[in-house]
Structures are given as structure tokens and as C-alpha cells.
Length: 238
Image (cartoon, rainbow, N blue to C red; front, side, top):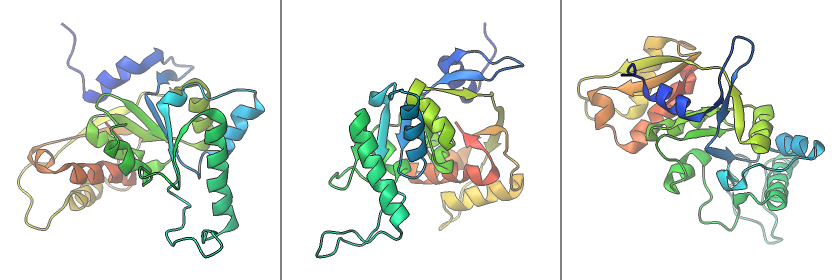
């Protein structure tokens, strides 16, 4: 019989394309790549410079959420962007998605929203998946039993081109929270207590798996908040 494995280890083992060695990181397959307008322009530009295309547009989903104005467009139809750079980011993502056949929740889409909320709402995020996004709070999706973490712009380009990612296997850390929360105490309070106990950066190099009575009693919003804030301790989340 095999040795017991954590959730992280199970998901990791199912997605390894090429095993890690002392000299090289593992090649990990990515089930879902979420994209927004801030960290993707340079990534799209790089794959195009190399004559590459998006490897799996069906596994890639984009939304406008970081640089979009919340005020309505003026009489001239112009949206009140905070800076010209914000407008350029949005328009660049629109062009890139159209050129590469990537689904985009754009201005006219009723699916558009914060990337870490809309992914679960649309059923894109599923248990057992590997989920990446060019955003540090991608750990939010760990609330659904996925291995989810943020990646940098160069890594965004790598996933666009290959649907894989170079990764060193993280260490595992189980955080058990038992008892009953007092009225008015939320998942965010739990997250802050965990961060206080671990210390800033105490989770660096680890994937946290949460367990215990308090975690089981949280609703999904609470669990998403807890996983979202794991990055504030330096950790990813499965």
C-alpha cells in the first residue's frame, strides 16, 4: 500500500509532466489559466515575438478587472480611466484575446468580475485542478480543493505557450483550527489569527492545508477569504 499523501501531494502527482531533479524543477501541467489585463500584455508580446500561439485557449479564461473604471462612460462614450496606462492595458488584453481565441469577459459580458470570484462562480475552478493566474491572491481558489497560486509575468507567457509551468515542489503545512467562532467573527479574522501565529512570511515555501472544526463550519465565502489571505503569510494553498 502507498503511504498516506496530503491533498497537495495528490494533486501535484497527477499533474507532473516531468519530475523534479536536483538540477531542474518539475514541469507541472496547468488545468486552468486565468488572465487579466495587468500581467498579461508583456506575456502575449513575448510569445508573439517567438512566433508562438496560445497552447490551450480552451484552458485559458480572461477578464477585465484590475484597471477598469467603476464610473460609467461619459456622453462621448469614453470611459473615465484613471490613467492612460490603465486604458492601454484593457485595450491590449481585448486585442490579444481576439487574436489568440481566448475567452474574455469583456465590457459587455455579464460574467465580468474579480478574477478570483468569477472563476468559482462560473464553475471554471474545480476540485483537484491546478489553477494559476498572474495575481498573488490566486490562492483564493484553494478553497475549492484546487492547487492554486500566483505566477509572474514571464511565467504567464510560459503557461500561454505550453500550458505547463516549471515548479519546485513546496513543503506542506497543515493548520488546524478547532472550536467555535464567536458571533461576528469571520473567515478574515481566522486568517489574521493564523498570520499572527505564523508570522509574516511564516508560510513562505509551504502550501497550507486548512483543517478543523472552524474550517468545516465556514461558508465558501469564508473559506475563499481564508485562502486568499494565505499569501499574506507567504504561502500558497491547496
